[in-house]
Length: 536
Image (spheres, rainbow, N blue to C red):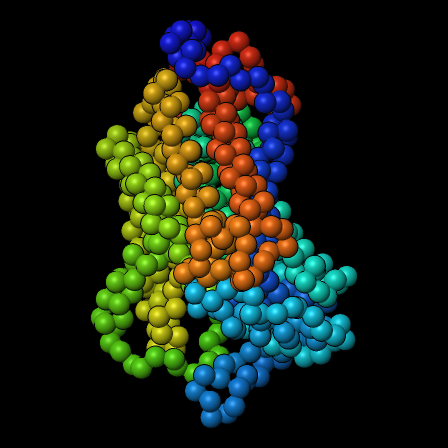
């Protein structure tokens, strides 16, 4: 190995070893959990999308009720009446549907009108609109309600879900950092972790499991097929198996996302690599496990009617062509929703945050098409077309019964694969990391940290004083007050976002440590390897 030029050494701080792989994972998890926990604390109870129904479903599954009894909610002649599932949970959870009603979809209204979450712990029939959803996520987050049927119990549900999401995201970053293409893959993974991803992880919603699990599958699979001779590929297979099973069992359409990920990965993989992978016992066991998980998910959908639409049609009959045009016209809205559309879709990430993300993702995608090898370009093109077309197809199929229903959050399990795949295509052409690349990664990670802070500040302002309230909401006001002073939450979030950006830059620029060993010190992080990143 040749030494790194003096100019490059001088440009980068002489980082000390980051310790073992396990220690790195825990640091990453702590930072991600801290950010999601701050989101959890600063959001009023039941302010997440459909959170009341998900909380009731979690409390029911924790008590052994996987489905429940279906009945109509509302008067027989009420056009707004909906079919719901009734379960027996503490009666206090009935108030979860009432609390956000005064401010949901009203961005100028602070959340203080909701009142306190209090009531009887005696079991009663409470409805949920998520009664037939996959039970795995709810079985995990519903446990705190067995002890605390109160506001503290709901906050613990949020924090438990945030801890699980952070574990999957930390595993995705661990897979990226084990690659010899990590200088590009880690920023690509950070690009996939939009404010919407971390916000969703902070509320009670099965997307908090689905999206991080999908990202872990994406990153681990891409590193495995591109870095077959890299470090720790046995762990990559294990991560694919665990996160893939969780993905398949998280939501109704999740098995479809797993199939699409596999198809895109196959398009990006050389034939020789496929042959070598097929000959490995752990890969075959992983594939069998994922097939079994998909089979279990399919069985639930059939036996529990998980995808059945029980409500009457909510939209007049329209032609397929008109539905397709309307759905395509919503693509821009869905894209903005992938970056950040919080709460009951009543507060959007600031324009600057959206532009930072779109500029960074656009640059890496264009760079991939400009310099990427053919197989990466083909795989990226397939993924981009699928991200746009598949939601249109699914929405068109259900339009006669549901009307327009798609949200950008639903596409995120697929869309999070775009930045890392594009970054991998570029990294495949970078034979020697440079001072410029190190600075570019630092700038990108810093810009993303700013986007997270702006999004967090906009959302917390909306809940405390409303979108028309004082910009300096952290100084207090007449609106809703979070459990911790708003100024302390914002200061903590700024510090956590900055720490995460610094830590990810450190991981991106540091050599891969041997299993269970610390990283070497003599050369600056990540810049001593000069072997061309050729395809395997």
